[in-house]
Length: 116
Image (cartoon, rainbow, N blue to C red):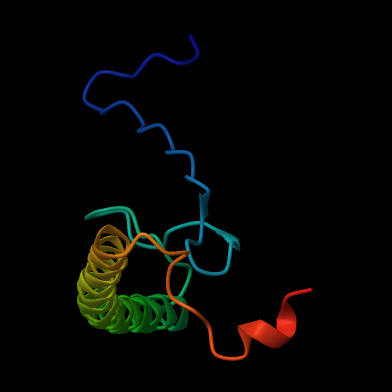
């Protein structure tokens, strides 16, 4: 009889198939050496180090971008309020001048030479 364990002997363990993984940094296929613990993401320590350095670099760039964006928002926010206030005042001044005089409105210096 084949495949049956003889009395007193344990059945032979089935060999486990190797799990092929893809390195998250370089994309190289690899078989994990250690069978215990969480499955590795990287094929070697160098890839793990470079991936870690890249994550740190990305966090730094994101922080710089966020700081600059906040700075620009402050600048444009202030500029927007000031510009809106100036525009509002200019419109009010023109309305007041037009209401006060029935003439053609304010004259531009040199306008006489430009008209036909």
